[in-house]
Amino acid sequence: MSPFPYRLVATDLDGTLLRADESVSVRTRDALAAVTEAGAAHIVVTGRAVPWTRHILDDLGYDGIAVCGQGAQVYHAGEHRLLTSLTLDRQLAGLALSKIEAEVGPLALAASRDGLEGEVLMGPGYRVHPGPLPYVPYEDPAELWAAPLTKLYIQHPTLSDDELTRAARATVGGLVDVVMAGPGVVEILPLGLSKATGLSLAARRLGVKAAETIAFGDMPNDIPMFGWAAHGVAMGNAHAELRAVADEVTTSNEEDGIAVVLERLLSV
Image (cartoon, rainbow, N blue to C red):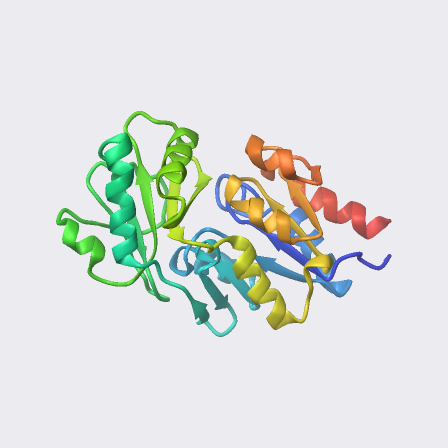
């Protein structure tokens, strides 16, 4: 086996490592196993908070460090504990929401609470993606602000995800960060937080540098991670904004795009 040219392989989950049914193919599992045998580490870097990520990591037999919540949480999967956690200033978030709604009209809201067992709250009108991920509906707006949050989710009745992201970012860009993380998923985050900040913290713990990292992703929230890593690989199903800044584009998540690249690098 040839030496693998990177010491760290960073992968997003949804639309990247995971197929539509939330499984990871045997081919991709084997490619990641070969990479770790060659001396590199694999790290998951996802927008999902820990409670929505833990079951996937457990299924993979993943016992290392993962970056969750768009970089807000660094999580030790083997020990089931948070190493770091950054919360959203609720006063700033409330101000940002009022400014965005003054610009585009009423929004449907959801929120991710902090912690290993942090609940995801869903407000009236928020469109939930079908699937097994648990959430708690709420009616009283006060419930949204009753405990520390890692992020807010916003939806608009008529604006597209890209339109809402652009409008929100233009309105409150100096207060909070706004990212589009997937279909129907526009998020409000602490200012300066990104997958890159979380990944850099995790990499430091692993003793790995940005210049030794290859990253895989599919959405605009992966752009900072691509900017940090030495090599960014967009999936074939990736958003146009990410494809535009990627070093290369592989096949889709349904076509083992991660494995295609890793196998090539292992054979060089």
